[in-house]
Image (cartoon, rainbow over all chains, first blue to last red; front, side, top):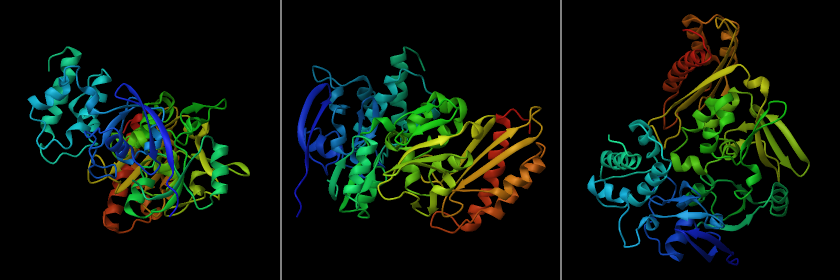
Length: 164
Length: 293
């Protein structure tokens, strides 16, 4: 047996500066779940296909299962937990998922919602076709995607102050 | 946890070369969307890795004084698509890499990784072949540059010497000036799929937009490595812009390609779509270049 290699990883997670020693073999999913108890980051396929582990790193979405934890050093990471309001309120996009029945089992939801956050924060207006493409990195076996598309679209128009 | 023996994080290109010399068995990991997945599958299990992901100097698209477009090897697909230089001069490359995997994959996947894995289905590879791209490699003996065609040796194998690292993809001015191109990916799904066949065509029209001064075409998955179709190019070059000449160009690709049957598609089906894609991509490239057809 060879010695386990560790590295000190300092990063910002949901607005807070954090640091911990991680095993260099760990994925970012491993670190977020095991070291920081951020269990919205789901372990799905673990090969970058399903999007259940999606998080925002420096403003862009990444599947954290195929992102080494050591690469997170110095980065700004956001997970679904960071969307919660001061009194535990849901954010507008989370509420839209509830209202539009865009959730059934909930396993894909955190990943989907973080992609939706990146889309909404761009401040742009997208067509249905563009939204479908932007959301295409996630698998959902319950909803058939239509309600997810509706939830994102509704929130997009709301934030832009427009009607559909 | 990934089954890796050791991880060495390189801080610069020089550091990468030194680490690769010190650990000759180690493999390079860029964005990791191939390496980590293969490690998970057991194919690279127990490997030593040299991570180059942190070398920001290898990111970004720039234009050099002589008009050469330089794409740093670690530039992600999504950054290539959004880049103003790419959009202005070689938009088809941005469009092609916008068809890789899904959005998250396009944020982590790099153009260097896409070419160094030597895979024929890589969405960037056919367009880079069709635009006479040059691969810049940096090793212990310094920098060498070679045409992308020579970089691909055989399926899954590229001309990377020991302790060498790909540092940039270059597109010379004469290769893009006056050209317009189009890429078509044929796959079973719209997202998260690998091309059954991909075809990239570009054309340079005469001033009156009536003659095809130059036509270049390259395929992914029409042979063991990405390839050009020189016979088809010769058929179309210098011809007038007519549907007959586009038709003849499409037929001629069969002389060049070496399609085979795999679990994704049969040889016959691949040949059929190769002809169809060539015609459609050329027609669209002509339109983009201002020609009427």
